[in-house]
Image (cartoon, rainbow, N blue to C red):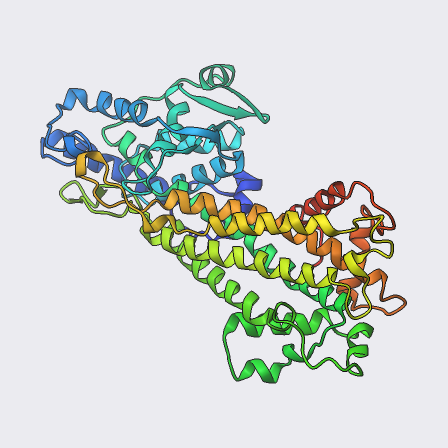
Length: 495
C-alpha cells in the first residue's frame, strides 16, 4: 500500500496497524509531497499573505508574520495547542491517527515537508507511539489538541508509548539517535489541522462493530434455540417483500445459524402462536443497525482518503482557506451508529430476560434449585445497567456547538466526543452480549439431548472451555469476563 497514492480502506488501515511496513512512500507520493513543500516555500518568499503560513491563527489571522519568524510560528502552534486532558487514548488509536495523518499529508496538498512525514513513518515502524489525551477537541478547525499531542515527539517533546510503557519522548528519541525536527512554514498547521482523532475512533469502532454485528446474530440464534422459538420470522419470502439490505442479510444469516436445529423442529408442534419481539424481530432490529454501519463505513472511507487540513495548497499561486477540517461529516453518522450499537444491547438484554422467566421448559433463573441459589438473577442486572448507560451515551454530541477562538470558529461538530462515545457503547455491548451468551449456553443444558445447528454447537463448546454449567451459586462474574474476552479476541465462529 502506498501512502498518498492508493485508496485506503478500513481493512488496509488495520493491516498497517498490525505491520506498519505494509505501507510506504513511493516516488510518486514523494514527488507530490516535495512539490507541495516547494509551493509553500514560494508563497513565503513571495511575501503574499496566506493564512497560517505567514499569519497568526484563528482570530489572529490578521497578524502578519515575517519570513524569519515562520519556523517559530509553527513551533509555537504545536506547543500552545497541546492542552488535552484526561486519560490517554488506546495506543492503537494513536497509531491509527499517525497512519491516517501520513496518508492525508502524502496527498500533496498540505505543504508539510518530506522529512516530517518520513519521521512519522519511522516512529510507527519503531513502535514509538505518541501519548494522546482523550479530551480537548471540539471536532472542528481540526482535532487541534489531540493532534498537537500526537506530533509533540517530532519536536522532542511530550510522551510516547514504547513497549507499552509511557516514557518521555526526548529520552526515547535520544536512545534511537533521532534529533528533534524543525518545522517548515506550514509544518505545524498541516500537522494539527485535520480530523484524524475523529477518524481513528470511527475506524477502530467500525472494525469492532463489524464483528459484533456478526456475533449478535449468532447470539440471538443461541437464545432462540434455548427458548425453542420459531424460525418462521426468518423466511426469505417475508423479507423479500420488505427488502431492506440489512434485514435481508440478517434473516439469511439466521437461517444458516439455525439450519438442522432439533430444538426449532420441536416448536412446530407446540401451541405458541408467536414469539416476543426480541426473538421474532431480530432481522428488523439487527438489520437496522447493519444499515447504520454501512452508512458510517462509506463515509469513513471517504474521509480516510480526503485532505482535511487548512489552507489547501493547490500551487504556489493558489491556496484555498476553507472548512475541510470540520468534523460534522463524521459526527452525525457516528452519533447515528452509536444509537445503532446501543439498540443491539437493548434487544439482547430482552432476550436474556426471556430466558430467565421460567417458561416453555426452562427453569426460573436458569437454575433447578432457585431460592437457595440466585442462579442467573444478577447478571441480568449488570446487563440492564450497561444498557441504560448506553442509552445515556446516545445523546448526539453533534447536536451541540460551543463557539471557540473568540467567535472565529463559531460552529463546531463535537465529533471527537461522538467517536469516543461510539467506542464506549461498543465496549459495554461486548459485556452485554457476554451475559446473553452465558444464559444461552445454560438454557441449552435443559434442551438436551436435542442438538443445535453446528454454529450454535460450536459457540456452546467454546463457552464450555472456560464456563461450566451452573449447578449451584458460584463466582459467575469471572465467567462473564471470560466470555467477554472471547468476544474481544474474536474467538466465536460468526460466518
